Image (cartoon, rainbow, N blue to C red):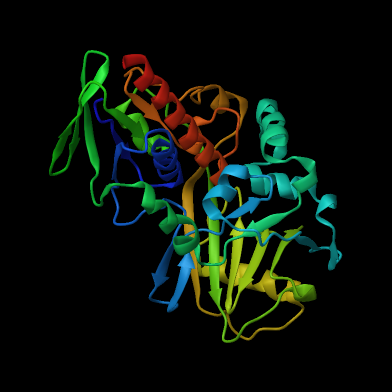
Length: 359
């Protein structure tokens, strides 16, 4: 029996999940992954910030207890029920009073702008009510807890390999061209393109979608600090900027969803956000601590009806041995680690059908 070769372009969570399932379906297959940068994980993962002298997550991620595929990747069971701080009343309350805030975090878009199909799918697939409020949040350890464990499913990893062209022959991909090399594909070889929408649309006949932004701020405090009631993770209702706060040792992280309209400079944003944090903690501060601002202009796809209608409904492409993965490819689901993982699994399943059809 001929050996199956699988080529994955893109080392984010969609590509890594696809590799995991390919190895499950085809244990003897060769899985080769090509990544344009010098690391795996995409928006997940951690890096050492020289200015703060601390290891930080690129973005603060949270998974729900009901997010089964993300839990398989993360392997975490330390779930908590977050409280909400009401910025207006200065009181702490149950999260169930702030459904719009929770939905904004999950969708990265105000609920009133979101297509009804997405809202329905979100409830059925991502938010079974029994586990809706149980959350695990990252603590600047994503590289070792989430990304590194997935390397076991890869036979070869090629870093700093930016895809330049997919060369077709008839209805299948015959060659991948990178900046300084090329890879030939046999008829039975499979390519999974696990890139973001903007990059994937350069190589295949795929629409360029609208996106929404997210901003994360990481403050380095002189000593470990605590949120109200000793919480390490909480939502904030009614503030101008702060929506979610998390603390790990002496790093306080802030998440601002749907940040499209924020045009402040980094220094201005650091000051304004720190003012809100001081009010939440009911303390006075003479200065703003060192802070790293991370902006993700295309963090998630927009979820309005027009944009959702243009998203792919399948991992299949016009080339029969090429499949797409990425949270943006899951038509009616919001962008998340769970959705990225589901897309990788779907691409692997459709690749499995392709291999069966030509065997």
